[in-house]
Image (cartoon, rainbow, N blue to C red; front, side, top):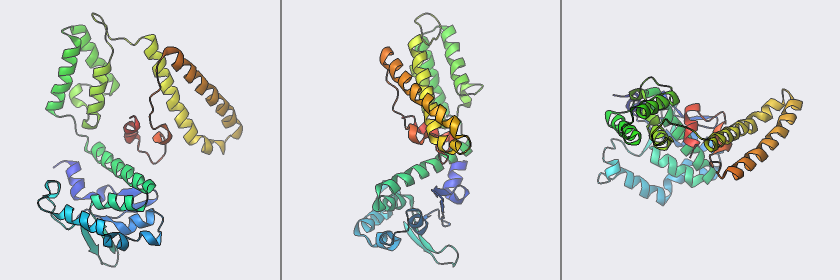
Length: 282
């Protein structure tokens, strides 16, 4: 059994965290609605009891517990459970009802819950350290073989660049969570027809602008805290950030490329796990 499977069966190993609140789970892995209620602001109108009595919620519970539903055929427990042991009292629900409850409260909280759950699952995968499957290895091998067109020098160079990019000694060591990134990397790596891989001047400038934008995102996230240590330095660098924005805009227009619309505003927040940041590159 993999670590991910163990976590799904024993989820308390990696708790769901919403803001400053850690969401408790019962022995069946269901999440405590009372903790979610606190994390959402503790508004009386959003009490779990009101949500559970909602007809739409009842319909969803019935659908989740319906044995004929293919997605829930293996459900071995009720979708809703009560704990009254004096320590962990509350209403506990399955993941689908966690999402539904968060959406019932308001959109911003719904998004917070989705991101928190995704971060938790990503951490499971990171802890699992599972390498790509033989089928995934074969797909990467097919891409390199197809794109190198029998040129042994290009073939070797592609694997060398790939392994260096992902900091691994051989492609079979690639973590499963990075598989799609590897596919994209190998498919877009620019190659000369009968020579080696290269990055032209335009690509270099584009990469420089993108990384400059990353640095700006980091700066705007953390400069308020740094200003408490050295206000004058932060003021000076803020002026540099403004000039950098103008330079990025001018270079991108002159070279005819568009800076990717990544989720820069949340990429360097402290609650965003380092290994989850690549998911914001969409």
